[in-house]
Amino acid sequence: MDIVISSPEHAFELKGKSLGNSQWLRITQEDVNQFARLTGDSQWIHVDPERAAAGPFGACVAHGQFTLSLAGGRFFHELVRTTAKSGINYGLDRVRFPAPVRVGRQVRAEALVQDAGRLGESGVQLYVRITVEVEGEERPACVADFIARYEF
View (cartoon, rainbow, N blue to C red):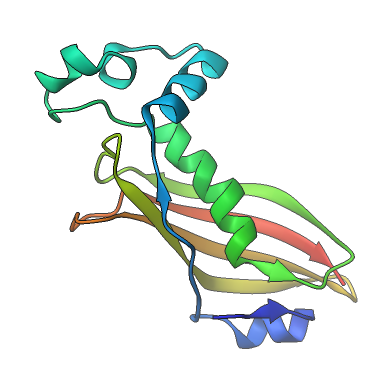
């Protein structure tokens, strides 16, 4: 899909509609290691392939917060496109991590416009659910409800 939100009214029309799926992204051990270094979360389940192979998931897994960062960064910006003069991340309402992302797997996201509310004369508060799926898995890795504000 190639939807670009062009006005608050356009955002209102998109309530309940999907903005499409992102491109697939392969999660590498180096990605996970870099995230661990930056955040100080170097738990073995993320950064020790030998130990993780014998662990509950059979491999290293990405941090839930890493998956959430992809949802709110790369995937959000790929899928939620606007012609707004400005936009800000206003926060999150709910986040869940139903399934792990094993290193080496691919992930992608879908964006669903849940709601939109007017802010002043030319603004909109947009509620978008980003669902991150893992290739070959039934359950999503992350489901997060983002709130963004745009001024057109």
